[in-house]
Length: 248
Ligand code: OAD
Image 1 (spheres, rainbow, N blue to C red):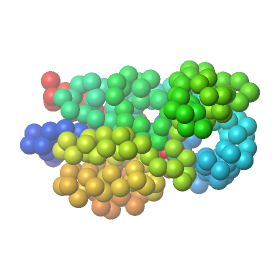
Image 2: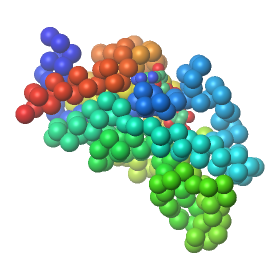
Image 3: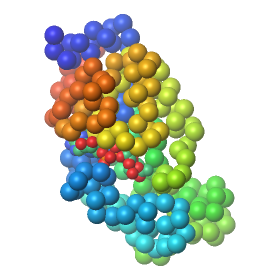
Image 4: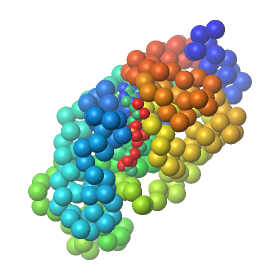
């Protein structure tokens, strides 16, 4: 039996798919991952200087320059075949829920309608003083530090930094997506950052069938029944096509 046939057999008795994604999903769009030895962002930049509340308090200009650079990089990137395959699965299967650690918005640009974003979004900024103001932007922005239109405090990127807690609502949505699924596909994450990395483990504990897609093995790989050692855009379009064909 091929992998897809096995997945179809599982879906016949336990319908529903949750797809959990990380930075590797966007690697083939030219967006760097975080932890890969040569190309990862954390190999070149210090997270302590760029992605903590303390770094922002110490030097907001440095933090904003880095996030604007990342916005520029993402604005030049296009969704790749894996993003498109995931969007097609969401549209074509009766219960397919998407959860991502990515902040790049590329799944949405590929046509995905509902994405639970565990780590925020690069294209949103929020009041750093916590007045609750949130703003969505569609251009990287200019050199000046953006200010809150409500209380005039500095705005900051609406992403989760080291030392910060994730949105409880997003975590609850991710948990619900796993609970509702027969199959959980985990793609393009090193499975090192918690609490996101706990989600596939929770899925295994709940008896879900977990499929991991990643060219490099991760701490999850030896625990899952299906490990696919390929890139996202090699593996996902073929799986999506067969699953969608079988469901029509
Ligand atoms: P990492 O950089 O930790 O891991 C990326 C994973 O993608 C690695 O396991 C690679 O092997 C894999 N990969 C690379 N190219 C791939 C491809 N073409 N197809 C499939 N997989 C590929 O990224 P994340 O696990 O997403 O958090 O990192 C988690 C969090 O750590 C990020 O959301 C970010 C970071 O600090 C915040 O900024 C809060």
